Length: 499
Image (cartoon, rainbow, N blue to C red):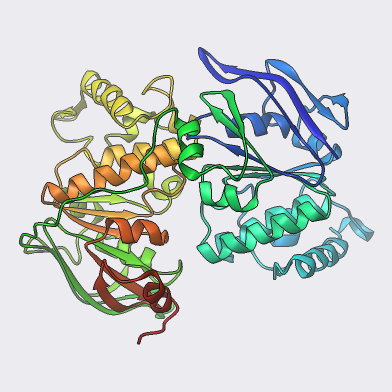
């Protein structure tokens, strides 16, 4: 089945999100949409899937014009979509989520899930997804949740599958598995639209690449194009993939962690007896496969974990048992792993989110009264400095693309005086231009004398930014090694192999 878009235009007030976009995706083709944050990729696909209505343009399936007013219309036309932020109900099971909107009942009005369970098991076996139909969504890792979304599209016979930033929350291993399954679906005749800004993945998986910049298709590129060429087309300027940094100049110890153990509510140790320190002017990067205790360690340092034993000292002050608010005011900047859940209040404006840590302090507040003019001035300044793509700093955070939401979090946390920066996956969901900017800011934080504790599953990022690398495995630091350690050695350590 082929899908063609002709002259799709979408406006939000004065902002033209899609500017007369035309493209065609053939059956058995992986067509990548490559573009920076806020370029209009997700808006375009939300139109195809019936979540938004175009102001102008046509959608054709197998050369016939169709009207899509809702996701049900899209599914009926053979179009399925896996969203960047999953559309699943956490307290429902896998099977219940998949039949939602297509429910069938048996005698006495009871929901009939058996047919759906059989289909889930069949598709899981075909693609090696290993998904339990009876599992609750809230108990599943994000990688498995994504498989549920894909299964739902396939069960409803999607011949065109839209994947919106599908690797943003996946580990490298899960990403490789997804790319393999995309190629398998392509070989079976499925047309796949792959929205991303990760160049390596595009080169590995795509048959054709449409590059969107500021709402327009600016180029059709080949997967054989170099990463530098693709990046330049994306952002409209040359991009450097080399991170330049001067040798570190270490100062006094800023963060000292002694015998830290973190337990869940059942008493099971998530992090076991970790000790380390970071000095001023140093970046300690924590590498490891997602799920080995990195998230819990980052949260414990800022007071977000309840069952913590051990001692955490910031610049000589014991902060082991302080509240999150006091930890932040003591001099910690925190970029959380999940911008949606922990980094932003979506219903607040951008400028309000930019002062969440400081709303009750001068110059933003005078006594109990917030100075709106100062808040607005700060918001406009940060939107420009961090290239946050929005009509105004008064727009709600919920209106932003995923990458621009991350920029709001970074703008807030890196724009106030602190001693320690704790950054969990700071470039997750960002395009190459934004990643370059964030890396430069992280280096600037280090060079200004701040200590940086960086958590990243991107090994290239760890190697490029770190002064030392701590490899985390099953809740422990299996080793702390120099930044010159080879990728092969780091890979072995990440798998728990210590030579």
